[in-house]
Image (cartoon, rainbow, N blue to C red):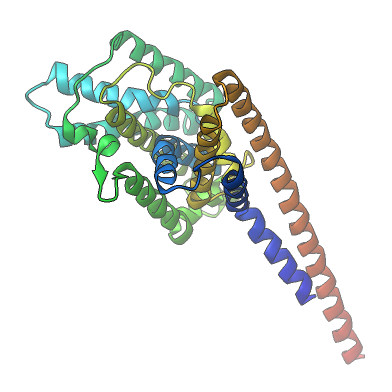
Length: 348
């Protein structure tokens, strides 16, 4: 009986950390297949080029934990720095300093998330359709406002994307890691985090137990919007300008990374650290294909296959977890029956 309990516990641990097993094996395979894959420069390169995507993966993952979906994060990534730079460089060139522009970028991202959250949580609009509409609206606004790129950006505003630390480590890497660690702690070790996860797993039970599920849903979209804005800061800083194509085509891969990282379409599962693994796996995947000289068309097809694999992984993980919970429940019932029989025999 104890052996079965340990086996179930081990399997549940494996389910929750499957992404790191995949990262390990993918890294191991590339050690032998891809030249110089494990070099210091290439590992830094993988982390650097994963920074933008990791913010979208984390934002999408948090919304998935809440049981929803956000398609607008890729447009928010371009919209937040775009509007902030338009206000800073064209509308109020003498009134907004670079640090305030950074704060403004994050606020704009949060406002987009707030709009989505209120429409979904309070007006009960379908999350898929609501965020699709938002994605199209703000991308259209970007195309209208920025027919050409906006540059040059202030060096302080570019710091998150272009700055370097000793050892030639990009500033974006520690920024991203700190964000993941902080949000992991919040979700795993605070009452807000427990309510957040519970709302996605069983919103009705959470509401009955006193959790304000409407506010939790709004918070999920606001945080996703802010994270997308952070990704926009890194992207704008990296290329030294703001263009209307920032973030375009990234949302489906972010969705795949979140699913592989432990989030689920059923809601209520996943951790930020797991989603970090999903983002790193996406970065390793793109890096290895580029280093092997795979053509852009084939890379596009393979990324589509990766999304399909993420869906299968989510389905398999869900069924595996359900089976283990069923086995555990049956075992508890058997144990309870055995105890009752023992008590009856003693009293007889």
